Amino acid sequence: MTDIIKLTAAETAEKIASGELTAVEVTEAHLARIEAVDEKVHAFLHVDREGALAQARAVDAKRERGEKLGPLAGVPLALKDIFTTEGVPTTVGSKILEGWIPPYDATVTKKLKAADVVILGKTNMDEFAMGSSTENSAFGPTGNPWDLTKIPGGSGGGSSAALASFQAPLAIGTDTGGSIRQPAAVTGTVGVKPTYGGVSRYGMVAFSSSLDQGGPCARTVLDAALLHEVIAGHDPLDSTSIDAPVPPVVEAARNGSVEGMRVGVVKQFRGEGYQAGVIQRFDESVALLRELGAEIVELDCPSFDLALSAYYLIAPSECSSNLARFDGLRYGLRVGDDGGHSAEEVTSITREAGFGPEVKRRIMLGTYALSSGYYDAYYGSAQKVRTLIKQDFDKAFEQVDVIVSPTTPTTAFPIGERADDPMAMYLADLCTIPTNLAGNAAMSLPCGLAPEDNLPVGLQIIAPVMKDDRLYKVGAAVEAAFVQKWGHPLLEEAPSL
Image (cartoon, rainbow, N blue to C red; front, side, top):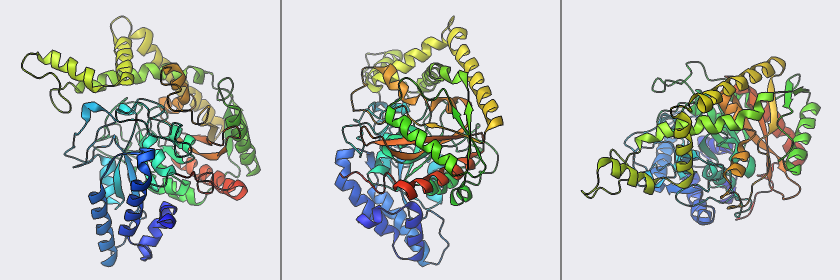
């Protein structure tokens, strides 16, 4: 089992296609790993054992019939519990949808099934993807496999923890303000936020519609690229989906190089609040890029200092609108319907019981920002800042091909440390938020361990809109150089459970 679960997704697919392994053997190995360690990690909210084995048997039957298998056929995957999955519970980490079983698949779920990827189950997350630590799940926190007393990032901590604990070689996350990249950084894995509109949002439960974006999570850059290619593409069911060819991400990942590229370093992405070990590993990464043939360009993007404030007005405003549908009348939890309460009272009682503190905080903040007399002062002003951030990116990309930064200001912090300090929690997304506001593509990949705590540090790569392949070109080059110099932070120094 140990040998199977340590394989990359690409290696696993090759062994299944050649007949060296069966999809059932691979699936059973990962299900056994989940059974062995997930009680401690709590990466999964629901494990679909029978469904996964049925998918694996179908892959093996295809191979026996001589049918051509896709590049990820038979490879297991952990799916963030924000994507609807027909016949399988989808809770979004919230009591308000506890036990809800969707009657349809999200487009991402459909694409995974069509590619014969084996979906092991649904992973834990901050409720409605609102959080930076996966402590806001209604079903309890997830631990970081590097140190179970530390957070695995948020909101997609379940997906990143499943990868880092070898419960799955692939995972899917969503990124509204950094919720793919931030968990990847603190668990030593790879996470990609595609260009906004590059992956369909149909069937992905909405938090902030102008920011939410699904994307691939993996342990290597190539594995992320293979998964990206499976889930990306135009979807007529999503009005924000981009009707354009998917960038050649797999080709870029197989031919990584930074020779002759201009790489930007933004001065706003360092300073007070950044852990010394994170800055040390980032500076080493920049030096490595220079060694590999890149030209390093210093950039000044002043509006980035306003990104956090703008985000925490725009995202709550959109969430207060999106979550209005959870009224206790149509689906999900219903409390107080005993004949003695009005419809309005049932809605109020249901929301009080069903939503957690962070969701309530953001709904109230968003409702206030959109209210009469405050709209222009708060939400309107935040949207103007968003435009300035996009303009700063546009100016930057006239000078450079990609931008690099630390993914997070610190390594993983202890569970509970920031639970009563929302502002400290929000600072975890300091480096990732500007990209969501502008709609660009971005990746986090491991760049070593911080010397003071021996925990993973992430390097963020940011590319222009629909230039996602640049992420993989640079990421693959950096990954190869790191492995050659120091070994893979996760695969070589995997935490023991």
